[in-house]
Amino acid sequence: MEELSFEESLEQLEEIVNKLESGNVPLDDAIDEFTKAMNLVKLCNAKLNNAEEAIAKIVKDNGEIVDFNVNE
Image (tube, rainbow, N blue to C red):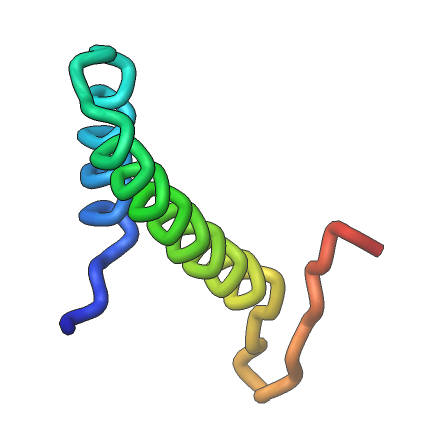
């Protein structure tokens, strides 16, 4: 299975939320959709964390890594 981009994952997550909010989903299907949604949330969270780590480190022209970690 091909890994989804952040945007594709977010779009699918929004579709699932809209479907579940409609209230017209049988319980078993709702549980399946909720499980899919939680997996998409994990994927989006991992992608955001990876992006944050990449942005937190900037390489200067001389190769020195500058850590811009805002959590410290």
